[in-house]
Image (tube, rainbow, N blue to C red):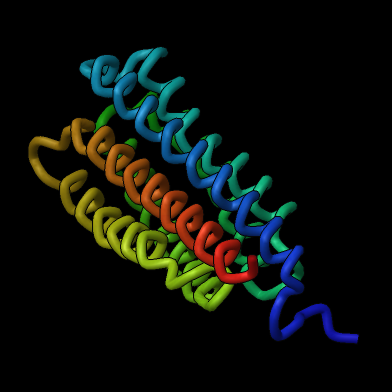
Length: 196
C-alpha cells in the first residue's frame, strides 16, 4: 500500500495549512527575536554569544520536529527529518567552533546554511500545489540561505570575518517565514470563502 496520496483530503489539508501557518509564524518571530538579541551580544565570542549561536539551529531543529509530526507521509517528510538532524548537529558544531573564534563559527554556520537552504528548497518544491500554494517565500528563503552560506565560507577565509552578518541572516529568514505564514493564512481564507 502506498503511503503517498495524490491530493490530501480537505480536512487534512486544512489541518496541515493551520499547523504550517502557526509553525512558520512562530519560527519567523523567534528568528527576529534571535537577530535582535545576537546583534547586541556578538562583539566577543563569549559564553552569551556561543549560547545564542547554539540556540539558533536548535530552534530550527525543534521547528523541523514539529513540522515532521504535522506533515502527512510523503517525500518531503524525509527531507524535514534530515534537516532537523542536521540542525541539531549544527548546534553542537557551533558550540565547539565558538571556542575557535569568528572564522570557525562562520565556516560552520555557512556550511549549515548551504545544506539547510537546499533542504528548504526541496521541501518548498514538494509542497507547491493547490492546497499549500506556490511556496515562493520558502523557495526564495532556501535559495538565499544556500547562496549566503557560500558567502559566509568565503568571508570566513578572508582577513576580517565578522559575525554581524548572522543577525542579517536571521532577520531575513524571519521575514520570509512570516511572509509564508501570511500567504498560507490568505490561502486558507480564500479556500473557506470558496467552499461556503
